[in-house]
Length: 273
Image (cartoon, rainbow, N blue to C red):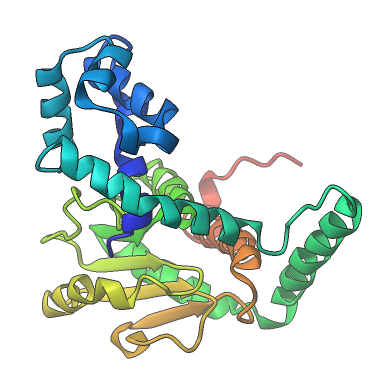
């Protein structure tokens, strides 16, 4: 999947978080972010001035981001402006404060999340969780696919498994610059609350199946396309709102990890009672 509405910001985020403090690309990324709302009116000379760099450095930076030239970057930013505000509107869903009834709005939001989590009591399938953990335990090389917030949770899962000596590679499906397939993987985990990137990841799924990989999907959506391509699907209760699904995914990752601990590391656990 290519999430074009956030791709530029993911690239800038990576530069900001991973570059040295005096890296000129970091200075350019900072100037671009601080002027993103009027970026379409900023010249390459002005951006060089704002970032204390040169025009040639700006040109190299633009190509590093994957754009042909500065004009193409500006056009992309301009066309992406609507997507940014649409994303903001999506984030306001179920928690749209109006400065008049904020307490009620917040309470309703919490009630919605709690109701969704309560529903897990009747639907959680521990046998399915243990079966997936057995597949993970038996696999030497695991690939993990996700993006945005589920991606952050997936990376936490990856880090926890690495600490147990289980080799996992994480692939960010919103980053077009990343290599999103592994030739050595024999098991792939897909974390997707609503399964909205699964169809866009068709090529990855087909290639993985061609390599005889086992595919596992963790989702709350039972009606997505391509579900027949997966060997195991762990459903996170009922198909609730995407907001509720985020919290459910966090719980399911905790359950996957904790049941993995008590099954395969029971003798190593420290008794804290």
